[in-house]
Each structure stands twice: as structure tokens, then as C-alpha cells.
Length: 298
Image (cartoon, rainbow, N blue to C red; front, side, top):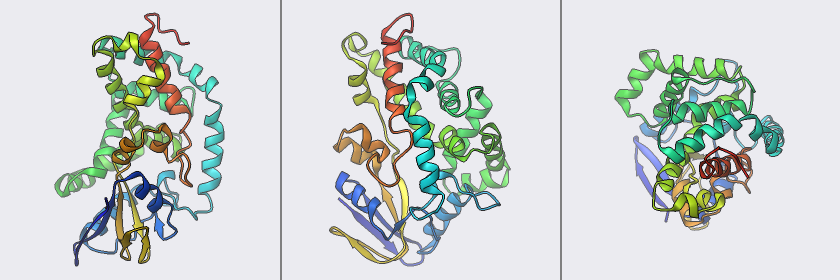
């Protein structure tokens, strides 16, 4: 069910959490990804946080481009096409998949799961992408920036940690903003899924009994929430939206009510994630590698 909070000068917000609400609001013409900062103190603070993912030249990370952005559709289609033929890409990252499979099976690894996942994701873009603890720490800094409270936000910005993390991620991504988004923000959902696979594998005979698709269904995770803004007042179904309201789409909560792998990626929507096919295939391969002591895949 949707609920709203309006405190004049402080916040204007609507949150939605059912699958039908999330899809309908996401598709509504008055809903945008860009945030104006109008509507109250919280609205302004949230807009300022997302503004750091815009370069001085005006380029924007792909997940923050609006529906009518002239470059969004072209870049999205180009990347989706590149990732749709995922067989060769998964063979490219086979060593990392084997490494993650061994971690799922044994519960131990020589390096952190986050570093390995970041390298897997980076090598979907550049075959020689190399992650390390420092690059993963930069990704974690950017992830924490989005959810940090006022004190941590102030520290990250004024200590230089935020800019250093942005610079490192962009340098590793060679200026490719899709790669930067994938290796800094989107990868966190894959890390969560791998950790859940490890837990699942250590529960009874699950590793022997469950096939890759069964494991995928139990461990795939969507973003907890994404932020939108209602540019104008309007109504979507039974939901009233005030002008310049922040709109929180509780994607993971909605996904649990509709266990369709595509839902986690908005696979049927205008803003579908270009990796909506390759990420489930990658996670299935990791589980299969865990099932096979040699790391081989079916």
C-alpha cells in the first residue's frame, strides 16, 4: 500500500511497495528520475546527493537519466545488445565465476567477495579490468553516500573521500559511465545474492538438491528502493501525487510479492536494466560452479 508524508518546508514524499503500484508509478508520464530539490529540506538534500553523479560537462550516470533524455534510449539499447549475447562474456569471466562458486561451496575465499564481484562486472566491459580492495572500498563509499545521514554526508564530502571514490571508479571505468554505475552501485545486489547463495549452500543438502534456477529464485535481490520525483500533481491508480513529491519505489519489497527474475530489473519497462539477462545467467553459473568441485559448469 502507498503512503505519503507531507511536512511543509521539510518533506513531501510518497512511498509505494506493491508490484502493481511500483510498475504503474514508474511508468507514469509525470514521474522523472531527475530531482529538482523542491518540496522541502529532505527533497533538497536527496537531490544534492544524486547531483554528484553528474560530470562538470553535464553527463549523467545512466541510472539517473530521464525517460525523455535523448541519449538514454540509445545508450541503453547499445549496452543491452552488447550484454545480451552473454555466452562469450561469461566465458571471459569464468575464473571469477569459479572463484565465487568455490566461496559459495566452502564459505572461504582468498579475497573479499565484493572485490571478485566488482572484477566480474568490470570485465563485462573491459577484459582487463582489475579490481582490488581499494577499488571496492571506493564502491562502498559511493553506496554509503546514498544512504548516509547528515553527519556522514558532511564528512564524506568535506574530507575528500567522496570525490576520491568518484575519481577512482571513473578512472577504472575509463570514463564509461555505465561501467562506473555497474561497478560502484549496481554490483551491490550481486554481492548480496552471492552471500545468500553461500548461506543457502550451507543449509542441509541444498547444494546437492537445488539446481541453478532454484537457487537463483531464492537468492536474486533487487535494489531496496529507488527514488523518483513527481514533476506535477497527478493521480496514478489510487495514489495521489503532489507536485515535486519524492517518490520511493520499494523494488525489493515488491519483488518478493512477485518472484519474477525480470521484476528486479524492470525488464518490461522503459528503464529496464541492460543486464537483465546476463546477471541471472551469471548467478546461475556461480551456483553450478559451487555444485561442481572442479568449478565446471553445465
